[in-house]
Length: 112
Image 1 (tube, rainbow, N blue to C red):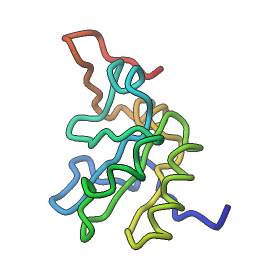
Image 2 (image 1 turned 120 degrees about the vertical axis):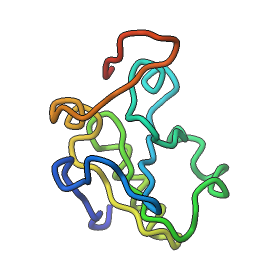
Image 3 (image 1 turned 45 degrees about the vertical axis):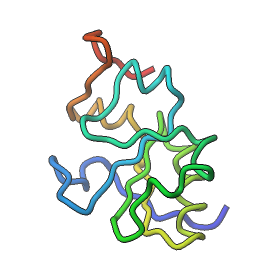
Image 4 (image 1 turned 30 degrees about the vertical axis):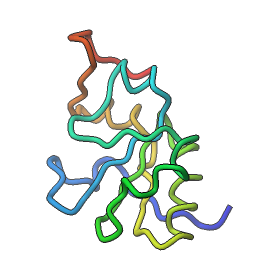
């Protein structure tokens, strides 16, 4: 895999500014259990079919559970004209850094 631009959770602003998208590429059950507020959810297997949902001019930070799937998606997006960076350590690092997570259906949020 080509060199993938990567950022750590600590390098991300606490609140993502306009023009910056956190793209979560985990599966639906992982998303439902706990995700970053305001993130855009497109499972890795659906990214190619849903490219029209990604703004071409926005910065994309791509996240999964630990960073493997998001690295592959980041490489794909950068090869197709987007400005994407992989979030090192994924949602596990996000959660360990004390960043907020929310869950669907009023459940206690967790990273699975």
